[in-house]
Length: 227
Image 1 (cartoon, rainbow, N blue to C red):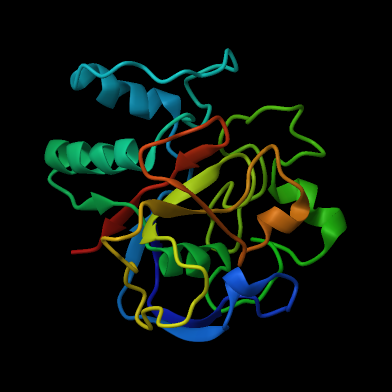
Image 2: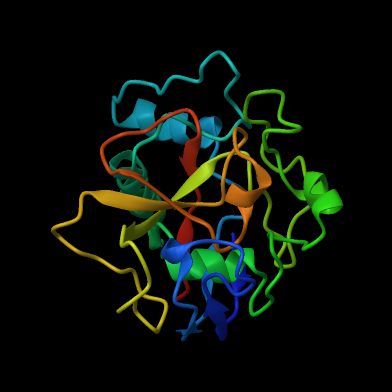
């Protein structure tokens, strides 16, 4: 885990490269430090949970397990993993909020297009995506980290966050909290994947998926409350 300091940033499409899903740009305060996983959760880590709770092992598509990012994991699965890990360790693990995720991806208040760079020729140094992935996810931590020392914040696999999906940021929380809505059945994913073009990897880009479904492009990353 990497401790991310408190601070504020402009959340959303600050470079005007996207659509309405990423607007309006708004100031968000991250009121206290939190920790976030240096890497995406791997099959090695998730399989321990599955075996301990007698769950069926998730399909790795014959791409390998161990240090590969876990895939075919639903938001509901990821949430159960955070609860189990919290019980096992006595620490409070959870999914990051969407605001926390973007703040961490940006390395704090920076407005780089992608996590780590705004220069397209450098993107392959930081991310696995459609042009260099070989058509599958790769072992975590194989590329350069961003300014906070976080690996694969863009590309490799999409990452579930806590928030429910909303079509824009009108009414979004201003203090880094998750935006929940009991009437919404889809949850937000961030970061893009091995199968996506660079536009989907932008730090402000937002995706969505049904909470009970996973696929071979989605994984997750842990957050942790700092006591």
